[in-house]
Image 1 (cartoon, one colour):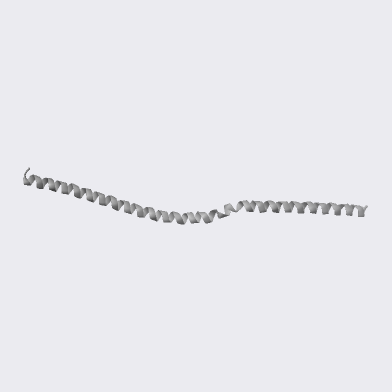
Image 2 (cartoon, helix red, strand yellow):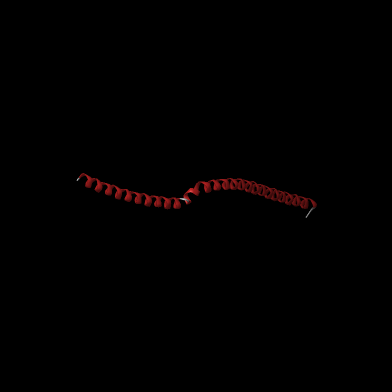
Length: 99
């Protein structure tokens, strides 16, 4: 192998090595850019999740609202029953006074 052959192959391998280094650097830069984009999207997602949590809190309180509404309905039915009894008693009393 002559000095020219050695120099030629040395340059070929330097070129191949340089191409590999540049490709690895480009891949590393693209990974860094993608990681920053993912970080930005994750921060946005955290804000959206916090908004969703605030917007869905009333849903979890529906069970207690339903119970209170049931209690109110029971109270209203009791008032209706008492009012009916009073109307019935007054009607009988009025009928007795008229007769």
